[in-house]
Image 1: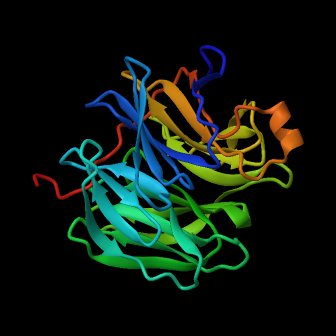
Image 2 (image 1 turned 90 degrees about the vertical axis):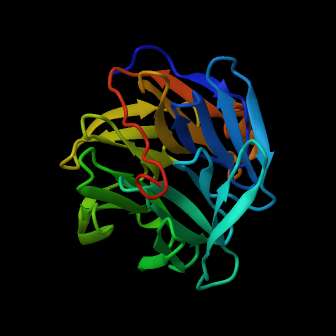
Image 3 (image 1 turned 60 degrees about the horizontal axis):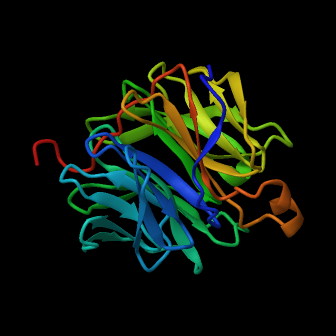
Length: 295
């Protein structure tokens, strides 16, 4: 499964780095520094990493058809031009409780942006899951979520995955790509006690679901029926999300967090909050782009 050792790709050491996103057209890996309020872009050829300050927490990003990024910010979804910093607001999200923000988000196979929310204290089910259409229309799909995470789609687009990290549960839905409707929710997997909480995820070309286990020192690969079939030990306690990158989509990149760690713990994992990479024998899937087809 692995073709080498895990290495530090970007020595970031952020409070929470998240949402790695491969842009094959530009050969760049994008990601977010949530509490640093920044979107980072790593040039695959040169190794240079640039940063765009957003000025507020940014929980997730997706590719857009016109070359911009769609982003889930504190309480809005916007299109952002990484070259100029120009921003166009698409939708405003009315959170149920104060001190909330948007978190994990992803573009679906037809170009819609799904994004979830959470209350910073993670002390109540005040979050929700939304679908944001290219015209800015917002549909609330579900509420009573503590920490929305784990969004991904199967290769054929007919299954949508979604997790609540605090419940330790990943669900699967039947997904209608044409209408953007998710139905028939059922449990896909539950993280065993002591093995971390489900965080961000990615699906590979074989239809297997990879999920970061926050506080679990690992990534886990699940078969399409939910079985755990591979575990990737991590050098940090808090991996946050994974994605497939590189020209062959065969480099697994993993973001991580350091904000919840003590000074003593950080001495044992000094690169916590950085971005890691490892070459693997399976390929990933190209990310869909936000926007109407042909637009």
